[in-house]
Length: 145
Ligand code: F42
Image (cartoon, rainbow, N blue to C red; front, side, top):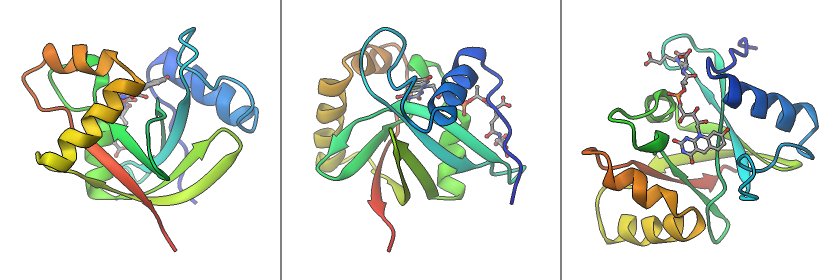
């Protein structure tokens, strides 16, 4: 079993500790927004370590939409590259943990549809897109058998 290496960002690490440490009963929202968060367990593409990334919970039916916004920063978050290299992840949604596979959706009408759903769920995504030159990546999940 690979080691878990926590995020270097205090607020992110703290949220993961609270969320996972409570078995998915505490620390479930982004700060005081009341908006739900999931924890995506992914594999470090260089270290092979276990990485845990909280993201907003955005649903398209039974599938999760993962938005690599990183607050509109100029570069993709590191987890984006981890997911491209190793698309098998675990998603914790409150008390439920499932193995899922993710795929990035290239620019297309399908991506536009998913983006609309994401912005409806978390309006700051649009502000983040407006302030960066990169097209913010969008992944969707499919449950693995
Ligand atoms: N970020 C989003 O992009 N979208 C969201 O919807 C979102 C919601 C959210 C809600 C709650 C919350 O607490 C955080 C939220 N975040 C959201 C922030 C998100 O959890 C990430 O912290 C953020 O996107 C930055 O991701 P990152 O992967 O760039 O993380 C950085 C800070 C980090 O911890 N980096 C590690 C480090 O040590 O600096 C590296 C981690 C890593 O995977 N390393 C790789 C390895 O092999 O282990 C090597 C990677 C390489 O290629 O070098």
